[in-house]
Image (cartoon, rainbow, N blue to C red; front, top):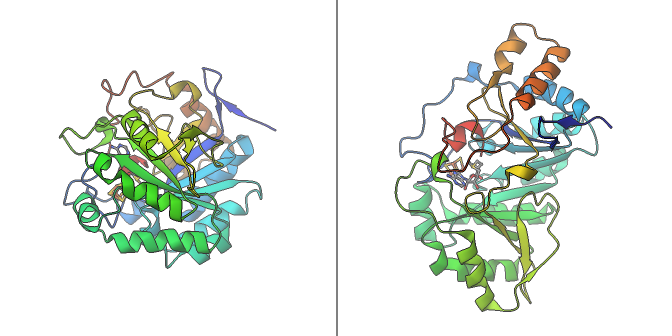
Length: 324
Ligand code: SAM
Ligand code: SF4
C-alpha cells in the first residue's frame, strides 16, 4: 500500500474536503451576520473535478475523506458526489461534518450513496441559545437531522459542540442527550484565530471535563471510529460517550495526518498555513493525473511541523472558506 509522508515523517491519510463555502446558518463565531462573499459557481470545483483529485489522492494513500464546508448539505445533490467518491475504493472511509439542519431530508440518499458516519454541529440544546448562536437556525431541524442519521444507521453519529461561555450552564442538556441516544458528544475548544468573534469566548475543554465528573464515574474509554485527536470518556448509564478536542490547550500537530482541499480547489497542508496550491486552475489548464499527484506531494512538502501556537497565526480565511 502506498502512503503519503510529510517532511516530518507523518503519514498523511486524511483529506478534509470543503464542498462549498456557502452556509444556511450564520454562527456568531464563524461568520459575520451578512455572511462572507461567496465564490461564484465557476470558481468552485465540480463534482467531477473533486472526484478526479480524490482518485489520485486515494491512489497515493488517502484513506479517509471528510466532506465539510461551509455547509456541505446546501450543495445540490451531495449524494451524487458521495457515490462518486465511494466508487473509488470500497474501503474508503467517507464522513460528513454538517450543521444537520438539512440532514433529515437527505440522510437516506446519503447513506445509500455510501456515507457511513456523520458529525453534526449543535452548540446548544436550548432553542433560544441555539437561535442566538446560529442567528438563523432552528434547533428542531438539527435534532431531526440527528434522529434521521441514527434511523438510517449512520454509525458513529457525533455531536460537535464548540465550548463557549454558555456551555457550563447547559452541560446538563448534553449529558441527557448522551443518556437518551447513542451519540458521541465532542467538546471542541474555540479557536479564535479562525473565528469571527472578538469577544472572550474561550473556555478550556478541561473545564467541561471536570464538570462532567459531577455526573458520575467519568472514565477514559475506547474512542468511536474516526476519533482523530479527541480523547473519549464514558459515564455510567449513558448510551453515548463524551470526547474532548483541545486544539488550543494541547495542540495535536505532532499527530496531524491531514491535507485540505478548499471549495475553490486550493490544496492546503494545514488549517493555519497560507501556502495554497491552485488545483482548479491547474486542472482547467490541462493538468494530468501526474501533475495532480505532484501538486499533492508539493503541498505536503510545505506542511509545517506545527502552527506555532494558535496565538501566533491566522489562517487568512474563515473556517467556512477553508473547510472547518
Ligand atoms: N457547516 C458545517 C458545520 O457547522 O458542522 C461544517 C463546517 S463548520 C466550519 C465545521 C466545524 O467547525 C463546526 O463544528 C463548527 O462548530 C467548527 N468551528 C467553526 N469555527 C470554529 C472556531 N473558530 N473554533 C472551533 N471550531 C469552529
Ligand atoms: Fe455555517 Fe458551520 Fe460556520 Fe455555522 S459553523 S456558520 S453552520 S459553516
